[in-house]
Length: 456
Image (cartoon, rainbow, N blue to C red):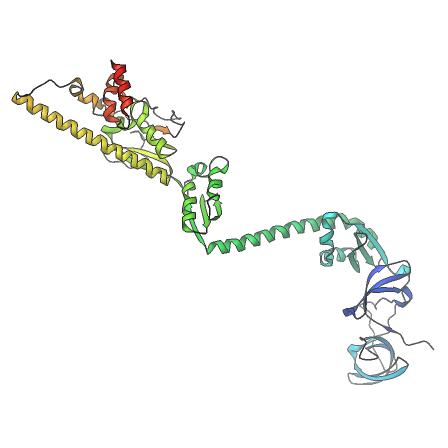
């Protein structure tokens, strides 16, 4: 008599010349090769028929507590409601057991396997995809498309092994192989980007809880804020304690994150470019500009502003008081503040000098009236309109905007009304030299002596 046979659930892991490698359910036995004669495919999914008394069936049971359940050949001896009394032989013994229909199935119509029961197809795996292909979940859609029963990466040959009971797998796998690898590569790239985005999100959340500042730069000043080849952003990022700098180009908004408010503030100083104006009395415009733009150029160079524009009468972009001319500085907030401080100091000096001149004129006039200590005023006093006032002959003709640039940029710019040698400084060179000592107090004694030598 033939010994009782039980079939246990397993998974085909590879196909060989006369056997298959099987991995058992729940690993109750180690993976091993089993001859074709001991292997049988499960019944078709749609295979079903009614179970009646006296039928030969298969029951899902086990011979002892040390083995898992398997399918044993049995016979139905009695039926009562939803219960079945079955009889089966196992381990040289006959067992009777009451079971429900869920543990019964018709006898499997499949015979034991042969070499032609399985079809195997292999595809060489690109080197950069070997790690990804070792995960069987990566082949889920490919497995469905080609109709494979099993797909895995061979540890010995580094090939993708495709197993099926259907011969069509060979053609389908050959057609879809390259597409499958491209799909894996694309998904890996997207997954990598998602991981980077997730890390960036986490970093952003952490930074959001740290010190940060946000500010907007006017669109026409964005080029200055970014700097040539992004030099200003690079400089700001090098500030110790600055962790990140973000730029939204659509809204011209900078966001600076740092470990301390001091670091964030310092980085902001490199990037926050703006425009601000200081009003200068029309009578002092010429003296503020100086001969050939010397005074205003010194203010630009010392403060570090990018440029200063003297707004002409024909341009009304900035509000102005009667008799005042706007000097518009462009640069960082710190540089603009420095430029305004220099300009205001120079204006205060010019006004003091003007006040002293007027007092001297009054004294001389009184002496002349009483005839005591009278002496003629110098040509400097006689020509007061030309020597001290800001050239009334030209004060009414400040029509165009004039621009003076930072280091190396003090040149005439497109659409500007004039350069530094403007008509506001139209006094003769000799007269300008005479008054330059008063208008520009920053010259040293050596400069004065050199001028005196030239005059003599």
